[in-house]
Length: 320
Ligand code: SF4
Ligand code: SF4
Ligand code: SF4
Image (cartoon, rainbow, N blue to C red):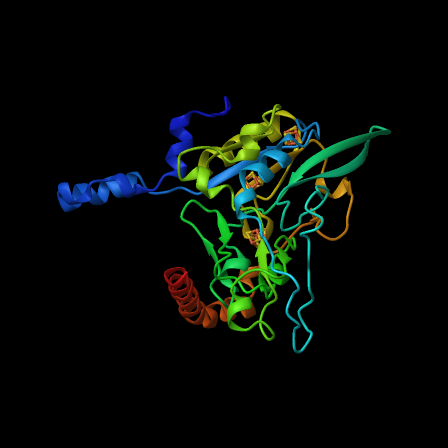
């Protein structure tokens, strides 16, 4: 457990109210207990002034999540029509300088001129875990979901790899691997073309009351995770102390990741390219009328599709 927050405060935000023995309490008391224990989203504060770019977090992420990485079947089936391109990272698993299906966190380099001197910064980048994630709300297949603690994740058993999540993500975060997933069984030539992958905030560790691997591994305590109200306060306090700037608090309507920088984000020059997200201002995508309407239409279809995906997987497991 990090020295930067108490275990109690962390658990308050990470564990659900499932432990409340509502059945053994009078109704009003049970409701009160449930309200008091209600899940507050977990927010990560990332102080980039502390990051030394050692990549310990990157390798910890890869190790901790290795079992979730894709093992594609080759040769890949041909797509008709050829509209969803093949993306194969399986022979380039060692790449760590961008987001890939095998690398959910990378260290981005940025620089700025401060008082006539060049300042170099290194920034851990991964999914922002948006408060109102377009990747979840606009996935037509119901494969992306958001949990009560604010994390969003893509279910690799259901995803068809159609890439809608990436198209609507303001930071183009999810990355496709071809030759793996449900599409191989049901529509190998017509739908999707793999599975999309991204940071899932180490949900398997959070469920056990542990911290995400990247946070545990960092020797500089760059990241702090905890309940939203506490983390927002902490981020503002630290930013004030260093005359710094925040990113993620308002972007895309607010995210569960808040970066603190000693220089304004719009003065930073970032290394850019595919798999390397920007740090520009982002308007709330889900506040746009067209996306809201789309989300309302998609929700029931996505629910049915996800149920079918889970049913199909169960049948397949029973047969094997
Ligand atoms: S950053 Fe992109 S992938 Fe992550 S939750 Fe937001 S929309 Fe989804
Ligand atoms: S939270 Fe977990 S999955 Fe996400 S970047 Fe950190 S280690 Fe990787
Ligand atoms: S482990 Fe910490 S100091 Fe090292 S690159 Fe990651 S965030 Fe930066």
